[in-house]
Length: 198
Length: 173
Image 1 (spheres, each protein chain N blue to C red):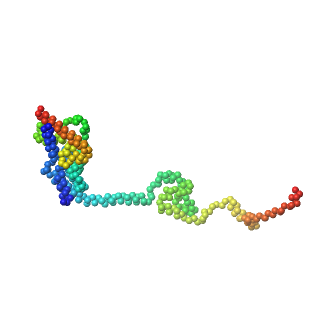
Image 2 (cartoon, chains in turn orange, blue; image 1 turned 135 degrees about the horizontal axis):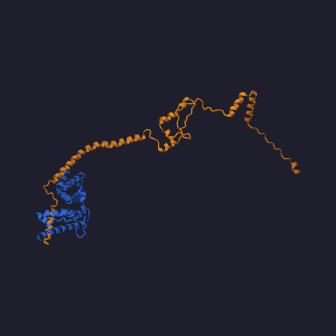
Image 3 (cartoon, chains in turn blue, yellow; image 1 turned 180 degrees about the horizontal axis):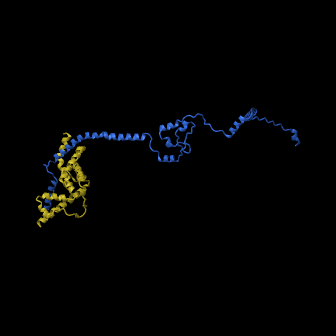
C-alpha cells in the first residue's frame, strides 16, 4: 500500500513539471516579440494591399467593357450554320433587270427561289444594304411589254381599213358597250269565255 | 489597463501552460513553442482573448487544436479500446530494467513513461495535472465525454503503476 502511495506521489510530481519549459526559458518574451513583429508587419501590409486594390477592381471592369464592345460591335461574325445551309440552297438570280445601263451595271443580288433576299445577305452590313436599295429610276414606267396577237391585229386593221369601215367598227363597239335595254313585258288578262268553254 | 498590457500579462502567465499542452501532443519542445506562438498570435489577431470565461480551458482548447493540426499525419494516434484487457500488440515502450537503471532521475523516467503512453491516455493525464482543469473541462477540450476522461485517467495511472512495479521488481530480483 505504501508503494502505491509512493508511485502516486512520483507520478504526480512528474506530471507537475511534465513538458514544463521552466520559468527562465524566456518563452513569454519570444512570444511577445513574435506578436509585436507580426503586428508591425500588419501595419505595413495595408499599404501594399491597397496597391493591388485598383487592379482588383479595374481588371474585371476592363474585361467587362471589352466583352461588351466585342458583343455589341458591328455584326461581322460568320452566319450560323442553319443560315449557311439556306444560303447554299438559294439560286444566284439577279434581282434587278433595269433597261438602262446604270441599272444593268448595278451589282446583282442573289435571291432564293421564292424571290426573297436571304437573311444573311440582308444583314451583311447596314451601309451595304442601303446602297442596294437606292436603285436608279426607270425611263418608262411600267416597263413596256410586247403586244399580244389581238392587239397587233387591231393595229393592222386601223392602219389598212378605210375611214367608213373604221367608223362602223367604232359604232359597233359603242353599241356593244351600250347598256342593254329590256322592253317591259305585257301579260294580257285571261279571257273568261275561254274558261267557261273548258 | 489597456489591451496591450492585458495581453502581455496573459502571455506571461499562461505561455508555460500552453507550452505544456502543446508538448503533451507533439512531444517536441521546438514544435511546442511554435504552437505557443501561433496560439497567442491567433488570439491577438481575432481578439479572442478578451471574452474568455475560463482562461485556461480556452487556451488549452486552442493550443490543442493547433498542435493536433501541426502533428504529422503519420503520427496520428490510434485510439485504443479501453474496454479491452489492456494488452497491446505493439512493441512495449517500457524501458528495460537495464535502461531503467540508467535513469538517475526518477522523474525523468516517469516522463519517458508518460511519453510512451498512447495519446488517448496521455492527453487527459497531462491536462489533469494542470490546476483548475477538471474532467468536464478536459472532456470539452478533447471532445470526449466526462466519463471517458475519468476512465482514461484511471487507465493511464494503472499503466504507469504497472510499469513502475515491473521496474522495481526487476531491481530487487
